[in-house]
Amino acid sequence: MDKRLDPRLYQIGALTLLLAYGLTALDFDTTVFRAVAIFATAIGTQAICSRIWSVRFDPRSAAISGLSLSLLLRSNSIALVLTSAVIAVASKFVIRWRGKHIFNPTNFAIVALMLASPRVWVSPGQWGNVAFFGFLIVCLGGLVVNRAARGDVTYAFIAAWSAILIGRSLWLGEPLTIPLHRMENGALLLFTFFMISDPKTTPDSRAGRILFAAIVALGGAYVQFKLFRTNGILWSLAASSLLVPLIDALLTAERYSWNRSPFAVGRWPLRNLLGERPTANGQPEGGLSCPAA
Image (cartoon, rainbow, N blue to C red):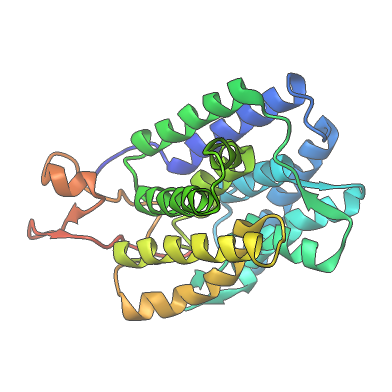
Protein backbone atom coordinates (compact mmCIF):
# COMPACT_ATOMS: atom_id res chain seq x y z
CA MET A 1 0.00 0.00 0.00
CA ASP A 2 1.15 3.52 -0.74
CA LYS A 3 2.47 5.16 2.44
CA ARG A 4 2.28 8.69 1.14
CA LEU A 5 1.97 11.64 3.49
CA ASP A 6 -1.57 12.43 4.59
CA PRO A 7 -2.65 15.44 2.49
CA ARG A 8 -3.98 17.18 5.57
CA LEU A 9 -0.51 17.36 7.12
CA TYR A 10 0.79 19.25 4.12
CA GLN A 11 -2.21 21.60 4.27
CA ILE A 12 -1.69 22.21 7.99
CA GLY A 13 1.96 23.03 7.38
CA ALA A 14 1.18 25.41 4.51
CA LEU A 15 -1.58 27.24 6.39
CA THR A 16 0.55 27.50 9.54
CA LEU A 17 3.45 29.04 7.62
CA LEU A 18 1.14 31.49 5.88
CA LEU A 19 -0.53 32.52 9.13
CA ALA A 20 2.81 32.94 10.92
CA TYR A 21 4.18 35.02 8.03
CA GLY A 22 1.01 37.09 7.90
CA LEU A 23 1.08 37.82 11.62
CA THR A 24 4.77 38.68 11.76
CA ALA A 25 5.52 40.31 8.40
CA LEU A 26 2.28 41.33 6.70
CA ASP A 27 0.40 42.83 9.65
CA PHE A 28 -2.70 40.68 9.18
CA ASP A 29 -5.63 42.28 10.99
CA THR A 30 -5.80 39.62 13.69
CA THR A 31 -3.69 38.60 16.67
CA VAL A 32 -1.73 35.60 17.81
CA PHE A 33 -4.09 35.22 20.76
CA ARG A 34 -7.15 35.05 18.50
CA ALA A 35 -5.50 32.61 16.13
CA VAL A 36 -4.51 30.31 19.01
CA ALA A 37 -7.98 30.61 20.56
CA ILE A 38 -9.72 29.72 17.29
CA PHE A 39 -7.37 26.79 16.72
CA ALA A 40 -7.84 25.47 20.27
CA THR A 41 -11.61 25.84 20.04
CA ALA A 42 -11.70 23.86 16.79
CA ILE A 43 -9.59 21.05 18.28
CA GLY A 44 -11.64 21.06 21.48
CA THR A 45 -14.91 20.87 19.55
CA GLN A 46 -13.54 17.96 17.53
CA ALA A 47 -12.66 16.13 20.77
CA ILE A 48 -16.10 16.73 22.28
CA CYS A 49 -17.98 15.72 19.12
CA SER A 50 -15.82 12.63 18.70
CA ARG A 51 -16.75 11.56 22.21
CA ILE A 52 -20.47 12.29 21.71
CA TRP A 53 -20.63 10.43 18.39
CA SER A 54 -18.26 7.67 19.60
CA VAL A 55 -15.71 8.03 16.81
CA ARG A 56 -11.94 8.10 16.94
CA PHE A 57 -10.54 11.56 17.73
CA ASP A 58 -8.60 12.94 14.76
CA PRO A 59 -7.58 16.62 15.04
CA ARG A 60 -6.24 17.10 11.50
CA SER A 61 -9.36 18.32 9.71
CA ALA A 62 -10.29 20.49 12.69
CA ALA A 63 -6.81 22.02 12.61
CA ILE A 64 -7.30 22.97 8.95
CA SER A 65 -10.64 24.59 9.79
CA GLY A 66 -9.12 26.53 12.69
CA LEU A 67 -6.21 27.81 10.62
CA SER A 68 -8.44 28.73 7.68
CA LEU A 69 -10.83 30.65 9.92
CA SER A 70 -7.89 32.49 11.46
CA LEU A 71 -6.78 33.56 7.99
CA LEU A 72 -10.17 34.51 6.56
CA LEU A 73 -12.74 35.44 9.18
CA ARG A 74 -12.68 38.78 10.99
CA SER A 75 -14.91 40.25 13.68
CA ASN A 76 -14.76 42.79 16.48
CA SER A 77 -16.22 40.10 18.74
CA ILE A 78 -14.00 37.25 19.89
CA ALA A 79 -17.13 35.32 20.90
CA LEU A 80 -18.26 35.27 17.26
CA VAL A 81 -14.94 34.05 15.88
CA LEU A 82 -14.80 31.30 18.50
CA THR A 83 -18.38 30.39 17.64
CA SER A 84 -17.28 30.01 14.03
CA ALA A 85 -14.82 27.29 15.05
CA VAL A 86 -17.55 25.43 16.95
CA ILE A 87 -19.96 25.69 14.00
CA ALA A 88 -17.32 24.58 11.51
CA VAL A 89 -16.33 21.39 13.32
CA ALA A 90 -19.78 20.49 14.67
CA SER A 91 -21.31 20.79 11.18
CA LYS A 92 -19.29 17.75 10.07
CA PHE A 93 -21.08 15.62 12.64
CA VAL A 94 -24.55 17.14 12.52
CA ILE A 95 -25.22 17.95 8.85
CA ARG A 96 -24.72 14.69 6.98
CA TRP A 97 -26.31 12.72 4.18
CA ARG A 98 -25.74 8.98 3.99
CA GLY A 99 -22.63 9.23 6.14
CA LYS A 100 -21.09 12.14 4.22
CA HIS A 101 -21.02 15.69 5.52
CA ILE A 102 -22.46 18.09 2.98
CA PHE A 103 -20.77 21.43 3.62
CA ASN A 104 -17.12 22.33 3.77
CA PRO A 105 -16.80 23.13 7.49
CA THR A 106 -14.96 26.44 7.12
CA ASN A 107 -17.23 27.63 4.33
CA PHE A 108 -20.36 26.71 6.27
CA ALA A 109 -19.21 28.53 9.41
CA ILE A 110 -18.28 31.70 7.53
CA VAL A 111 -21.54 31.86 5.56
CA ALA A 112 -23.67 31.01 8.61
CA LEU A 113 -22.13 33.80 10.68
CA MET A 114 -22.29 36.34 7.85
CA LEU A 115 -25.99 35.54 7.55
CA ALA A 116 -26.51 35.77 11.31
CA SER A 117 -24.55 38.92 12.11
CA PRO A 118 -23.22 42.04 10.35
CA ARG A 119 -20.30 41.98 12.80
CA VAL A 120 -18.32 39.36 10.85
CA TRP A 121 -16.63 39.70 7.50
CA VAL A 122 -14.04 37.99 5.34
CA SER A 123 -10.59 39.44 4.88
CA PRO A 124 -7.93 38.15 2.48
CA GLY A 125 -5.32 40.06 4.51
CA GLN A 126 -2.64 42.35 3.15
CA TRP A 127 -0.77 39.80 1.11
CA GLY A 128 1.42 41.71 -1.31
CA ASN A 129 2.85 40.19 -4.48
CA VAL A 130 5.68 38.28 -2.78
CA ALA A 131 3.37 36.53 -0.31
CA PHE A 132 0.71 35.83 -2.93
CA PHE A 133 3.02 34.19 -5.44
CA GLY A 134 4.94 32.38 -2.72
CA PHE A 135 1.74 30.86 -1.36
CA LEU A 136 0.61 30.06 -4.91
CA ILE A 137 3.76 27.99 -5.38
CA VAL A 138 3.11 26.23 -2.07
CA CYS A 139 -0.46 25.45 -3.14
CA LEU A 140 0.62 24.10 -6.52
CA GLY A 141 3.32 22.09 -4.80
CA GLY A 142 0.65 20.56 -2.61
CA LEU A 143 -1.14 19.21 -5.67
CA VAL A 144 2.08 17.55 -6.83
CA VAL A 145 3.04 16.20 -3.40
CA ASN A 146 -0.42 14.77 -2.85
CA ARG A 147 -0.73 13.48 -6.43
CA ALA A 148 -3.82 15.50 -7.19
CA ALA A 149 -6.28 13.42 -5.19
CA ARG A 150 -8.78 16.20 -5.81
CA GLY A 151 -6.77 18.27 -8.26
CA ASP A 152 -9.48 17.95 -10.90
CA VAL A 153 -11.96 20.12 -9.00
CA THR A 154 -9.24 22.71 -8.30
CA TYR A 155 -8.19 22.89 -11.95
CA ALA A 156 -11.79 22.95 -13.14
CA PHE A 157 -12.80 25.74 -10.79
CA ILE A 158 -9.84 28.00 -11.47
CA ALA A 159 -10.26 27.49 -15.21
CA ALA A 160 -13.98 28.31 -15.05
CA TRP A 161 -13.51 31.29 -12.72
CA SER A 162 -10.66 32.70 -14.82
CA ALA A 163 -12.70 32.29 -18.00
CA ILE A 164 -15.64 34.11 -16.42
CA LEU A 165 -13.55 37.02 -15.14
CA ILE A 166 -11.55 37.44 -18.33
CA GLY A 167 -14.58 36.91 -20.59
CA ARG A 168 -16.59 39.52 -18.68
CA SER A 169 -13.80 42.07 -18.93
CA LEU A 170 -13.40 41.44 -22.66
CA TRP A 171 -17.18 41.82 -23.10
CA LEU A 172 -17.16 45.12 -21.20
CA GLY A 173 -14.02 46.39 -22.89
CA GLU A 174 -12.06 46.48 -19.64
CA PRO A 175 -8.27 46.10 -19.62
CA LEU A 176 -7.09 42.62 -18.71
CA THR A 177 -5.29 44.04 -15.69
CA ILE A 178 -8.69 44.16 -13.94
CA PRO A 179 -9.49 40.39 -14.01
CA LEU A 180 -5.85 39.56 -13.35
CA HIS A 181 -5.92 41.78 -10.28
CA ARG A 182 -9.10 40.06 -9.09
CA MET A 183 -7.34 36.71 -9.31
CA GLU A 184 -4.34 37.94 -7.27
CA ASN A 185 -6.32 37.42 -4.12
CA GLY A 186 -5.24 35.44 -1.08
CA ALA A 187 -8.78 34.44 -0.21
CA LEU A 188 -9.20 33.02 -3.72
CA LEU A 189 -6.13 30.81 -3.22
CA LEU A 190 -7.44 29.53 0.10
CA PHE A 191 -10.82 28.86 -1.47
CA THR A 192 -9.42 27.07 -4.51
CA PHE A 193 -6.80 24.89 -2.88
CA PHE A 194 -8.21 24.29 0.61
CA MET A 195 -11.98 24.76 0.47
CA ILE A 196 -13.65 23.73 -2.80
CA SER A 197 -11.10 20.91 -3.12
CA ASP A 198 -12.16 19.31 0.18
CA PRO A 199 -12.40 15.61 -0.79
CA LYS A 200 -14.97 14.86 1.90
CA THR A 201 -17.56 17.32 0.56
CA THR A 202 -17.01 17.29 -3.21
CA PRO A 203 -18.85 14.83 -5.49
CA ASP A 204 -17.41 11.32 -5.56
CA SER A 205 -16.99 11.05 -9.34
CA ARG A 206 -14.57 13.05 -11.47
CA ALA A 207 -17.31 14.14 -13.86
CA GLY A 208 -19.39 15.22 -10.87
CA ARG A 209 -16.53 17.26 -9.44
CA ILE A 210 -15.91 19.07 -12.72
CA LEU A 211 -19.63 19.83 -13.01
CA PHE A 212 -19.66 20.99 -9.40
CA ALA A 213 -16.70 23.33 -9.96
CA ALA A 214 -18.45 24.92 -12.95
CA ILE A 215 -21.66 25.39 -10.96
CA VAL A 216 -19.78 27.07 -8.11
CA ALA A 217 -17.95 29.39 -10.51
CA LEU A 218 -21.15 30.39 -12.31
CA GLY A 219 -22.97 30.89 -9.01
CA GLY A 220 -20.13 33.00 -7.67
CA ALA A 221 -20.22 35.21 -10.74
CA TYR A 222 -23.98 35.66 -10.39
CA VAL A 223 -23.70 36.67 -6.73
CA GLN A 224 -20.79 39.01 -7.37
CA PHE A 225 -21.80 40.67 -10.63
CA LYS A 226 -25.62 40.43 -10.61
CA LEU A 227 -26.46 40.61 -6.91
CA PHE A 228 -23.45 42.88 -6.25
CA ARG A 229 -22.40 41.06 -3.09
CA THR A 230 -18.84 40.44 -2.05
CA ASN A 231 -17.47 36.93 -1.41
CA GLY A 232 -19.57 35.50 -4.24
CA ILE A 233 -17.68 32.22 -4.42
CA LEU A 234 -18.17 31.58 -0.69
CA TRP A 235 -21.94 32.06 -0.96
CA SER A 236 -22.00 29.96 -4.12
CA LEU A 237 -20.08 27.05 -2.59
CA ALA A 238 -22.45 26.89 0.38
CA ALA A 239 -25.52 26.88 -1.88
CA SER A 240 -24.01 24.51 -4.46
CA SER A 241 -23.03 22.00 -1.79
CA LEU A 242 -26.71 21.17 -1.41
CA LEU A 243 -26.52 19.69 -4.93
CA VAL A 244 -23.73 17.24 -4.10
CA PRO A 245 -26.07 14.41 -2.94
CA LEU A 246 -27.97 14.72 -6.22
CA ILE A 247 -24.76 14.74 -8.28
CA ASP A 248 -23.51 11.68 -6.39
CA ALA A 249 -26.81 9.91 -7.08
CA LEU A 250 -26.60 10.65 -10.81
CA LEU A 251 -22.85 10.13 -11.23
CA THR A 252 -21.94 7.34 -8.86
CA ALA A 253 -18.44 6.47 -7.67
CA GLU A 254 -16.72 5.21 -4.56
CA ARG A 255 -16.32 7.66 -1.72
CA TYR A 256 -12.98 9.16 -0.73
CA SER A 257 -11.11 8.03 2.37
CA TRP A 258 -8.24 9.90 4.03
CA ASN A 259 -6.82 6.55 5.11
CA ARG A 260 -6.41 5.07 1.68
CA SER A 261 -4.25 6.09 -1.22
CA PRO A 262 -6.20 7.47 -4.19
CA PHE A 263 -4.29 5.14 -6.49
CA ALA A 264 -1.61 2.53 -6.42
CA VAL A 265 1.92 3.32 -7.48
CA GLY A 266 3.80 1.79 -10.34
CA ARG A 267 0.95 0.71 -12.62
CA TRP A 268 -1.30 2.51 -15.05
CA PRO A 269 0.88 5.68 -14.99
CA LEU A 270 -1.42 7.81 -17.17
CA ARG A 271 -4.49 6.76 -15.23
CA ASN A 272 -2.62 7.33 -11.97
CA LEU A 273 -1.90 10.90 -13.04
CA LEU A 274 -5.63 11.35 -13.54
CA GLY A 275 -6.33 10.07 -10.04
CA GLU A 276 -7.51 6.57 -10.91
CA ARG A 277 -6.32 3.45 -9.16
CA PRO A 278 -6.20 -0.23 -10.14
CA THR A 279 -8.63 -2.63 -8.53
CA ALA A 280 -7.68 -6.01 -7.16
CA ASN A 281 -7.97 -7.56 -10.64
CA GLY A 282 -5.67 -4.95 -12.14
CA GLN A 283 -8.32 -2.93 -13.92
CA PRO A 284 -8.50 0.80 -13.26
CA GLU A 285 -11.42 2.54 -11.69
CA GLY A 286 -12.02 6.24 -11.21
CA GLY A 287 -13.70 6.23 -7.83
CA LEU A 288 -12.09 6.50 -4.45
CA SER A 289 -12.81 4.43 -1.39
CA CYS A 290 -14.72 5.68 1.47
CA PRO A 291 -15.75 5.97 4.96
CA ALA A 292 -16.85 8.85 6.92
CA ALA A 293 -15.32 11.89 8.33
